[in-house]
Image (cartoon, rainbow, N blue to C red; front, side, top):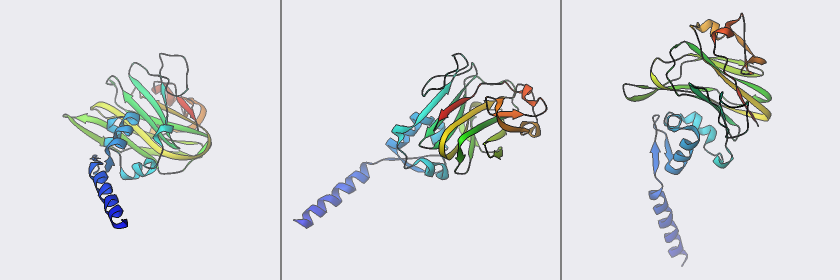
Length: 236
């Protein structure tokens, strides 16, 4: 009887394994189909398609039912509770907390005219950085989805930021992902260059509650070259 039960168990496991389909992304990462689709609902298809192994390792064991997501809109009052929309005419900023793994995400609704050095930043209140920082800029080129990780990272005790040259392609999305530890708040902002800004000027900032989006405090009036979009925040 034990041999029969064991054989049945092995057969059941084999059938389950066969039926559990996986999807392979850009980096040849195999992700179980249901989990892949759940991630796409949270982050969008492009983010998951270009998910690296190191980034996936941050979230692969997380309970996705506990994910919190804030969407910020300049067309609405200043709101910050989970799942409230906040967007400008040109772009939408998201702040996602996946069990302590934070993703700042910017999606463009219209193609920006000026393409210069934009800055994405976060400020920590009561929490600290607990992993590497991963940045990606996705875009469409000749009908093919591509990604670029080129950026200049600055770290501070109370936050961090990345400066990068906005792509001249279409369907632009930018992401910054990292994990944190502790209890408190994370503030995030995306500042679009409203005029030509050099890489050097785009990195001339500190992290401050009085800065643009309650995050980026630029020196020498450099902040006047950015669109001064409001920020988002989420409690951890």
